[in-house]
Image 1: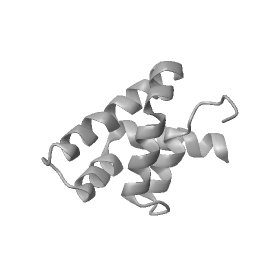
Image 2: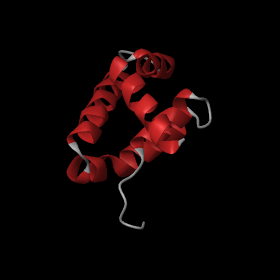
Image 3: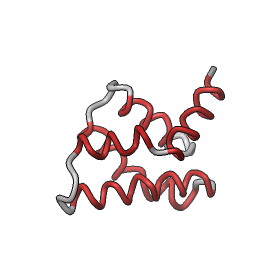
Image 4: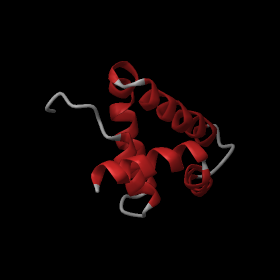
Length: 90
């Protein structure tokens, strides 16, 4: 790794866009969550915590993978962060 922060927004966009499957997103998330938590900005950590809450519900068998994706797709914070990410990438 080159020392840069893992791209949570990019991976969320890939998940929501159907580019990567849910299980691959989960593997990436668990491998990078600590780096984002410890080295990310307040906005990074807020987004990370939103995802973590949904994944807690998923791992507790309260919601399934499709419900996690739907909740992420319609969450105002995710929408805002991904819109900002698209603007930065464009």
